Image (cartoon, rainbow, N blue to C red; front, side, top):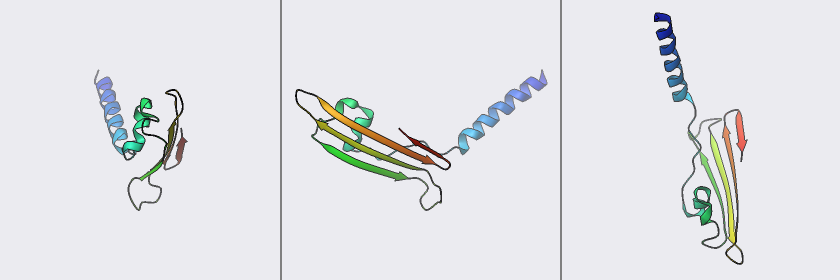
Length: 98
């Protein structure tokens, strides 16, 4: 019984510590050009927009996490809008592009 409780406690401590040492979640500056990332209905509502956002965490640290966003959207005829969003995250050895 004691071994099961000790094992459960070690698992909880391990995951608590692991959660604290991971890097921060990707985020970027929230402004009017980036609304379409959260709400696709915003695409094209204010005319054509092209925006590039870059965020570097932990300033002046080699290999610090970086997030890049490229956002483009434009209105077309008959209430049709087109939009494109590209995101790139670099977290140490991991590099993701969506």
